[in-house]
Image 1: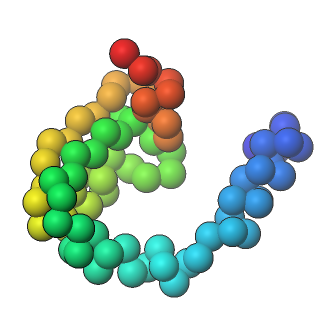
Image 2: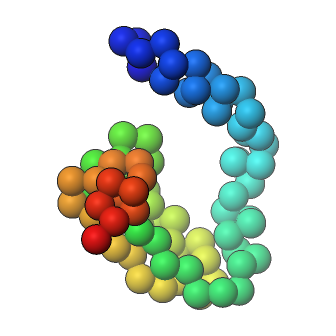
Length: 82
């Protein structure tokens, strides 16, 4: 981010648009989702550690499968579409 002004600006826009109160209440939101929820996670995600993601799956009333993608970071489906 420090070496790329465009990426830094994008990150700052993202953080500025976040509703932090909504983020703090995600556990309650997750508890109201009746559908089966599968999580696909990048094992090297620098923002949301995989161990925390595994715990989040338990917040859903109908937890499904948890898939960790080796070598992937924040966007595993884009980084490793296969």
